[in-house]
Length: 115
Image (tube, rainbow, N blue to C red; front, side, top):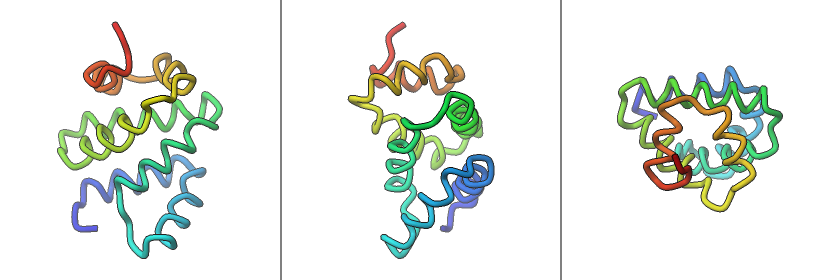
């Protein structure tokens, strides 16, 4: 993966969220390469089953990624995490409680949260 900021972000996710390791391994085996947007969609699906402490850690990493001022990382989060939340009302309710201000603003921007 040529983008070092994105590679660092995904490494951080994999290191701090052990539940992502099997998803990452399966994703690379299925696709023969790392496709960040597809991977984030699979991670989003798995996030629905997380306990709140694990979800909070995951969301904190997303928050840092949004604050890192790298367009590629923000795009993966905004397009591939946020957009995959449409129709996930239960997960969105949990995220609304746990999300930081940057992620909350992104969810508001796309109309997934109301003020």
